Length: 266
Image (cartoon, rainbow, N blue to C red; front, side, top):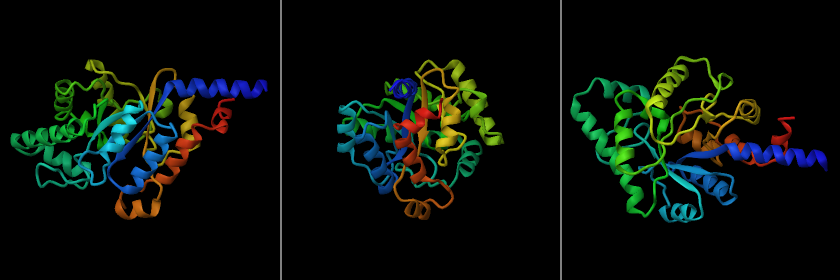
């Protein structure tokens, strides 16, 4: 009984520090089904919604928010069609090329698209609890001022800054290290609420082992970013370049509620 009590105390402590966010709601029915299932089991604290996605049940989201779940804007400028312009960027690389080598009119169009995505929440009666972006493009030099300004203008209290809480969560790749440098720089001057993030180094492929290892270094409120889905085959056909294990990350959310997760800290 004493051991069980200790495990439950450990689980409660970890759960009090880690807020699980499920990204990409609205992109695919399989993603939505997994996210809503986890939300109804109270296994999530946040959902990030792609307002330009084709599969959004706004009434369902409104009910979840009324019940205490935080709903955020997952601004999607890459991998999905824009609503305000006939743009479709297949990767962040093509998007960045257009961002930095296009005339200023592209920035104006980009701002309109971001604002349109934000407007969808208010049009459907939802409060935006936080703002982030697909593939974290909002921390890029030309985009950060736009996101920050629109967050303030739309009274959004929090913004994701994807910096890791410790060196143990670092991934030794150029893109990941560059993201960390940008994020730490944004953190210095950001007046909006933000927390460190887990799940970035193994995005889409997080496992119980990697998560338990990263959690050992958590000492403050931290966001754990996951991408759950309930059908790897359908999702891999739809997003072949992502190479995510959606079902694995769905299982990981349930693992975070289990005693084996607490035992991993003994």
